[in-house]
Image (cartoon, rainbow over all chains, first blue to last red; front, side, top):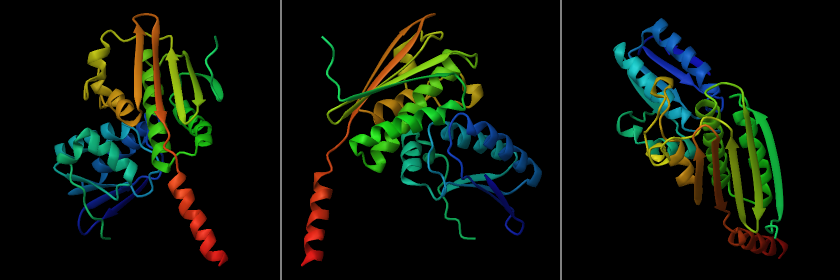
Length: 105
Length: 160
């Protein structure tokens, strides 16, 4: 996972490039929480463009970071959902809570 | 009488989370013989990943145990069986409920069985508390004749 912080907009972007399952998600979660606390962004975005696989562990990952970011006063969104990622998110209903945003950088 | 199948494979591995990708990639490679679409293959991988994750974090609760996986091909159908000798499920109906999880502290979404049921054609769960759980799921792969026909036509046009 690649982290980028855009100082001007206080925007923190996580570009995930690994397969997301119960195993990989533990590392992603730790790293994301660490970076959110470090940068204290106004907005956090998970970019799924390079994600080739995701199971239900991705739902917990996003919901968990959403709560964490909110607690620290930041908004959270998801971006560039691939069809298989979209399918999992649609099924869980989390997109009613978490906005899909365009990343124009 | 032995059940008639076209191909069969069996796999055994210890319940380490790092084996989740090994399991789903192996099943996907095996299922590839049926010429599934990218979406069908993704569905199978996801369902396998959910079932194997259940064995590791629920059945064995991160202690070491053996996960058994077998897959059969029968005409255009893949039948996958994933079993463990873990703690078993007390209430299967409840476990199948969307968003129900016994481990919310691990950020588990409770969507595992829901995903298996909607990504596969059929899912059967058998479980005995203290003995283990067996999940059997199957999916029919749609024929791709239409695609092939289009390609044939294209071939014809190019030749002309």
